[in-house]
Image 1 (cartoon, rainbow, N blue to C red):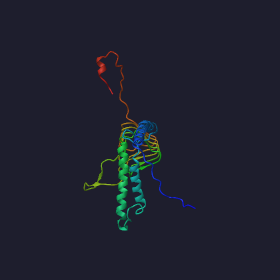
Image 2 (cartoon, rainbow, N blue to C red):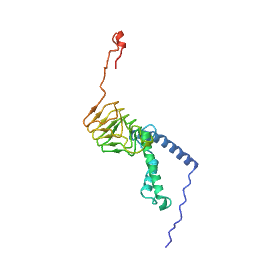
Image 3 (cartoon, rainbow, N blue to C red):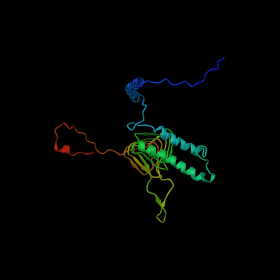
Image 4 (cartoon, rainbow, N blue to C red):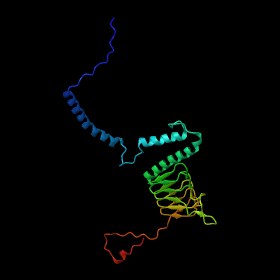
Length: 241
């Protein structure tokens, strides 16, 4: 009985003519396929580019996830074991790094500045968003809606008897449940409370509390609307707003 042969098969040589033919075929395939791929990116959203609103790249997400794993399970996702004596400092550094990269990323993409110390309830909604500022000691209830340009900020720092700034404490307003605040309104102060179910109109400036179920607006003065095509009179130039 003959022993079966296990010798490695030799590759079949490709002639120069066949190699040139394969190169032409591949070039034609690429030329035909690229437009199809580009069309699929447009229809299915398969690209992450500068001209669209995109999530961060997979690589950036991967780095943040790795940082979070190192934070949650120190030593298990590091190249070396973590010395117990350095754990406090290392944990603080890693937490600060992750927070900075995530708040900064969100702020740069949206123009919204929410301090991580603020307390925000469920079903929170920001319409348009650009220019919204929510301070560190704000407490927002449930079902709160803010429009662009809203500032929930602090008044000047309290000073002690020697004139030194006293940091900490409650410096930003509270907004209770079911409140809507329209564009470019500013609400300041740690003692300021916007009562539940209230509506704050556009361009309102508040440094005092508002009871529940309030509507806060600036009363209009006089608004005049004229037909531009009509014959102008001298009085038409006296616009009153």
